[in-house]
Amino acid sequence: MQDAFCDSDVLAYIGLPVDYEPLPSTSPISFLQTHLHQLPPHITQRFSLITTPKQRTVIPEIRNRRLRHTEANPPDLGFTIAKARWPLLWQGRERRGQEEGQEERDWAVKGFLGGTKQHIGKLGTLLGDYEEEREAERVRDIRRQQATPDEFVPEEDESDSDDGVATGDLLEESPEEAKASFERLVKERFIYGLLEDIDYDAVDWNEQLDVLDERDAEERWFDEEEE
Image (cartoon, rainbow, N blue to C red):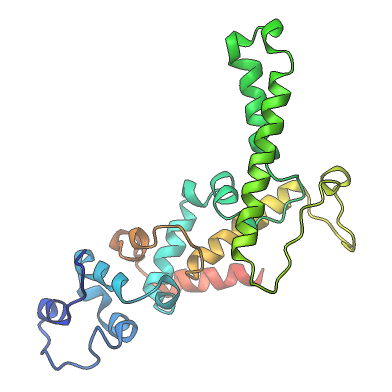
């Protein structure tokens, strides 16, 4: 990708005059809505210099490419990776870091010195507790960094992890329902260009994700939204 966006390169590839309107640089979304399929990926990628993933969401072809990508269940949008990358989106009831802590305990039991009990002692519990606290502190730091100056970010109440019911909740999702809701939320936010720390370019400009009938894919997405 070039360091600067150049109108003349884009226009020349399609055979358009230099005074063509709208210019790619001044109205990139309008230009892409008309000419996306006339441009190869090595040129469309340059539009990432002058547009954001959220802005590109209004282009049906790009939105459908993202939909096709999510339908393939990519690992980076899967539960484990997504929960660690976007912890503020996860509304599960388990104490922060519980899964990471259990991994440390399992390693101590199965992997440390061959799992010999006399060498393990309380090592598994100790490592697990340390890992839980590290992950919990990481999430608290993210919440503090993303909070506005006037927004108070409370410490998490670990007692919630014991009873599994939040005050004021009338209905609580099962763990499976909570996981499915989270995965759907992550995929929705990806499609609408709202996720940070993810490579949108690899999807938005990937012609291999095009479907034969873009309208059918679009309608299928909104049908699922209404269910």
